[in-house]
Amino acid sequence: DPNPERRLGLRFPDGFRWGAATSAYQIEGAAKEDGRGASVWDTFSHTPGRTRNGDTGDVAADHYHRWASDLDLMKDLGLRTYRFSISWPRVQADGTGKANQRGLDFYRRLVDGLREREIEPMATLFHWDLPQALQDVGGWENRDVAHRFGDYAAAVFEALGSAVPVWLTINEPKTVVQNGYLGGHHAPGLRDPEAAYLVAHHLQLAHGLAVRALRASADARIGPAFNLHPCYPVDDSPEALAATHLYDGYENRLYLDSVLRGAYPRDVLDDLGPGSRMVRGIKDGDLAVISSPVDLVAVQYYTPYYVAPSGDTEVRWPTSEAFWQQIFPDGLFDTLTRITRDYGPVPLTITENGLPCPDVLGADGTVDDPGRVEFLRDHFAAAHRAIEAGVPLESYHVWSLLDNFEWAEGYEQRWGLVYVDYPTQRRTLKRSARWYQRVIRDNEV
Ligand code: GBH
Image (cartoon, rainbow, N blue to C red):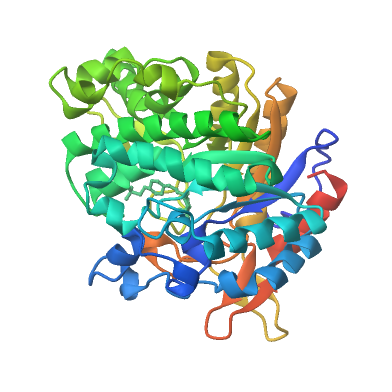
C-alpha cells in the first residue's frame, strides 16, 4: 500500500482503550538490583548457544532505571492503557516466603506514575521469568509450584491488588509448553512431550489459584492471557479437517475450554492418552479451580496456522521478519468472533499484536519502520469488524511499546513502536508511533 496512513474512517466505540504492552525480563534490565533473584531466563540466556549472539536481559532497555521517562513517552503517545508484567524473582527472590519490599516498591512507583498520567495499568503476574530456585525443584512439572504461584499472587495483590484495575495471570501458557518443553528454544530448554502437557495442566491450575487469590483480597478484574491461533485446513478433505480440529485442540481449546467450560477437550485428552503424565496429573477439583469465573479474556494474536492432513503446517500467507509469523489480519477477526460464538459474551482485550520490522534510520534522526503502519491498520480494521459483529472488545495493546529482548532472538528483531538505541538507551518514536498517536487521539483508523 503506497499510503498506509490514509484514513479508513473506522471509528471505535467511545471508551475503547488503546495501549501498548511489554514484559519485565524483556525491558527492565537491572538483573541483580534491589534483591532480585535469578529466573530461568537469566540461566538460559547466560548458557552459551541458547540466544542469538549470546544476548541476555541483564540490561535490556534499562526500563528499571528509566521508568519515569518511559512513562512520559507513553503519555506523549497518548496511551490510555499500559500492559506490563511483574517479575516474580523481584518479589520473591527464591519464589517463596516473605515479599521483597524493594521489588514491590518498583511496581508501586510504576503504577502510581501511570495513574498520575491517566494511563490505566494492566499487570501480568507471570511472563515466563520463573524463579530459578523453583526450577531447581522441578519447575512447572512440580505441582507444588502452582501453589507457590498462588502465594506469590496473594503477596502481589496484598501490595497492589486494588491499585491495578485489570490483572492477567499467566502470559501464554502454551508458549511455555511449546517453546520451553517441546521445542526447547525457550527456558528451561527441555524437549519432553510428557513433561510439556503436565506443565500445561499445572500452569492452568496456577492460573485458577491466582484468580481465587484475587477474589479473597482485592477489588479488581482478572483473566488469563492466551496466544490463540486460528487453524485453517489446506483443503476440505476429511483428513485435513480432522487434523485441523485436533490442531485447534492443542493450540486453542486446551486453554479456552479448561478456563471457560471447566473441562479439557476430550479429543486432546484422548490423543495424549490415559497413561500420559498430564492425564494422570489431573486431580479431583482441579478443573473447578481452573474454571474459577474470570472477568475477561486477554487475546494475543500474531499468526494463523494452515494445517495439512499429516498435521504439519504449511506457509500460505506473507511472512514477517519472524520466521514463524504469517500476516493474516482476518485471523484476528476469526479469533475474536470465535470466542464470542463458542464461549459466550465474555469481555475481551487484545493484549498483544504486532510484528518485527527493519528500522530505517534517517539522517534527520527519524526512524521509519516500513510495514508496521499497514500491519497495524489492517489488524485494527479487523478488530473494528469484530466489534461491529458483536464482540465485546474493550481495549487493544500493541506489542510492543519499546524495542526489547526478543527471547531466543535477542535484540536483533525490533518489535517496538519506539526505537531503542541500546548503546545510549536513547528512545525515538518510530513513524508507526506517530501514526498511532493520531489513531488514539481520534479513536479512529
Ligand atoms: C509473544 O509470544 C510474547 O508474549 C512476547 O513476549 C514476545 O516478545 C512476542 O510475542 C513476540 O514474539 O515454536 O519456533 O515455531 C509470541 C509467541 C512466538 C509463540 C513464536 C510461538 C513460535 C516459534 N509465539 N512461537 S516456533
